[in-house]
Length: 104
Image (cartoon, rainbow, N blue to C red; front, side, top):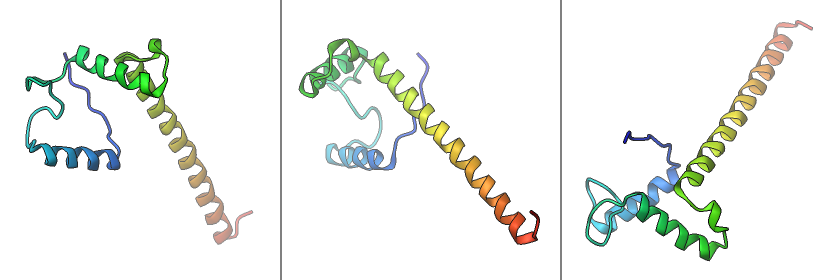
């Protein structure tokens, strides 16, 4: 299985670091089973199903693949917004430059 690199927001990084500090984790997996082994797909599936019941999310939407797809679509939306904002900023910069130089 290949590793995936994910962008983790600063606030979540801070919470994870705090959790690691509380648990005395300095290396290796952050989330492990009661026996100390790294959580695998089935462990994660059980955990998110348990959480989904409390959150009242339908069972068919609760699996690692759906979470991954949600993550990907969220990231794509963010990238699209960033692209639009960059283009708008560039256009404003050009307009300001033209006004400064005196071009109409």
